[in-house]
Length: 378
Ligand code: CAA
Image 1 (spheres, helix red, strand yellow):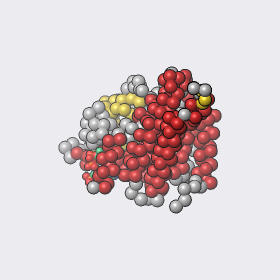
Image 2 (image 1 turned 90 degrees about the vertical axis):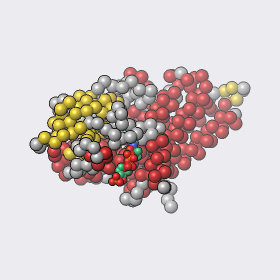
Image 3 (image 1 turned 120 degrees about the vertical axis):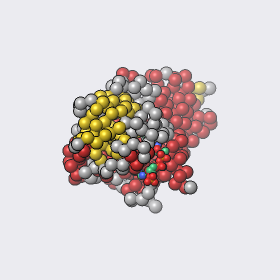
Image 4 (image 1 turned 45 degrees about the vertical axis):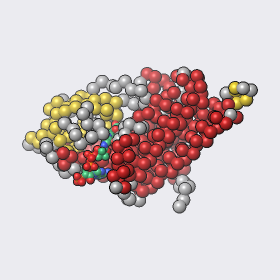
């Protein structure tokens, strides 16, 4: 068993860390306060090959493994969790899905620009009445000649506003549950397709989340991904990989919490010595470091299983539940170590706590991850 990163993985880590320090860190507070989508940074991430990391070179991707992707996600998230979710959705929910399930024609037209970051993708599965119970959707795609006519509303869509292309899941045959769901690629700007207003969120405020409205939208049959009725399985198989991305995002937030806790506790003097000399603080820091290490091992193991072509969904769920709970604990303790200052926006650490929370919710709540883990065992 080799726990060392390969030379290529080390280079990716260094590149992502430098990029985050130089390009993301300077504006991160301003962007989050003003809810500014990180357009320029995303373009640069595309130039670096971070928007389609695991896509094969044939389709303009980086041809990298899932471990490299997890490493890059961690480094970007350590500085800017909003930019990280844009990267995560594009890589694992959109590019991965297209490469694995779409026709060559769709890959040529849509995957190529998405993998280079020239276009941005979104993944729209949830609806107002179907979040965790994802197959209980109402959006309908009715076949009419050489087109489907789509009507319905999707919600909680990351990149809903700033994306160019959207992966849409809709019902093509009613009354047969998940077997009636199909997947499509929809272009922004098509008649009847509009995003809603940006949601006002607790965290990851520089990323956009919105509803999507479909009013008699015509989707050509060629834009269906996979066969009719395969959509739900395509969504779940894709989310397995997405969960590695979100686990890595959580890990980056946890690592940032540890970094900030170490540096502040060495500076802050109380009772005549730095608070890092107090056992109460030391124990918090020790717990953070221990849990972060364990989360990283779970993430890298699930990524390695994915790379090896093994069944990895339950492991990705374990990585996501654990890493997101570690991120929540680490960021809460980081604020605690910072005391009153930590509660102030200017400390920068309350943002970590707000950003951490969503990692326990999106791409499957912690409860749903436990369902996936338990089903794999039972
Ligand atoms: N890969 C492929 N197929 C799978 C699968 C997987 N990982 N897991 C299950 N399936 C198959 C099953 O075998 C079954 O097929 P058959 O009927 O032919 O046997 C079919 O899919 C349905 O499976 P279930 O009966 O297990 O489905 P369910 O309705 O009980 O749901 C669930 C299972 C795990 C709860 C699932 O609904 C789920 O993961 N819910 C959470 C949804 C979610 O993660 N939403 C996130 C939204 S996206 C988001 O957050 C994006 C963003 O913008 C950041």
